[in-house]
Image (cartoon, rainbow, N blue to C red; front, side, top):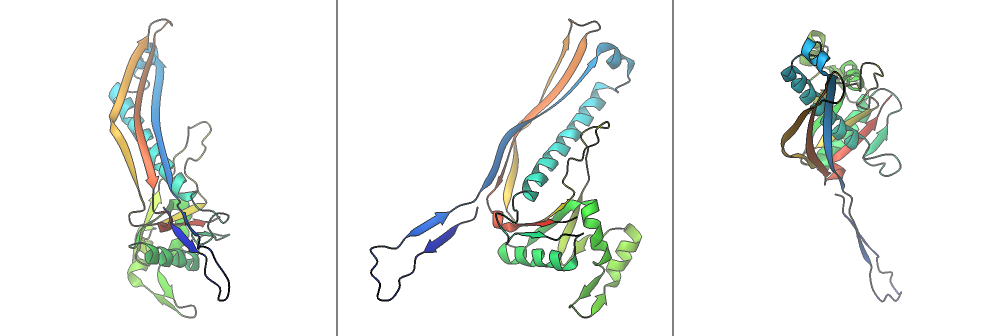
Length: 242
């Protein structure tokens, strides 16, 4: 939530009947439900081609987690644009740079209790390994041996400028279309306590077999209500990369 109070100032020598105070609030929230369903003929299920029912349930739970993470990341990464808030948004116009990332981290550190994480797909965050092993004052670069060692051993860097780097594993809608579900052109710098994500109750299952087709058709569904609220939007910084 962003609150701004604007007071009209008095001009010497002018006559004013009253001052005007306006309060604006910005909040982003989602209240929705998620459903994952799998269907197969009894022959396919009995043959073991799809795996056991227990294995199918486990895969469905994995898809539900992927959906939740994609929903959260997409909401965070599309919250700010150059049009609605240039302060919390930077279009880098290139892969992520040290200057753009440092500016975002500095801003969130000054706006909230500190940066909780820098989040993006591994592809979007990987360029950090090209500059994250050293520190530059604009003229001179100082190498950080531990960072160089970490990058060379793992191909990754766990932190930059004090902020944890969290790579989101890319997920796809299905093997045929293979469309990405996580935005690849956004990196989000998140401050402390910017919002909440909750689920309502346990995951519920519904399983039934329709006897009308031959062979019968088996269906398993799981569903759950969830909600997400961002009530400290100024604690989120969006970086658009290419």
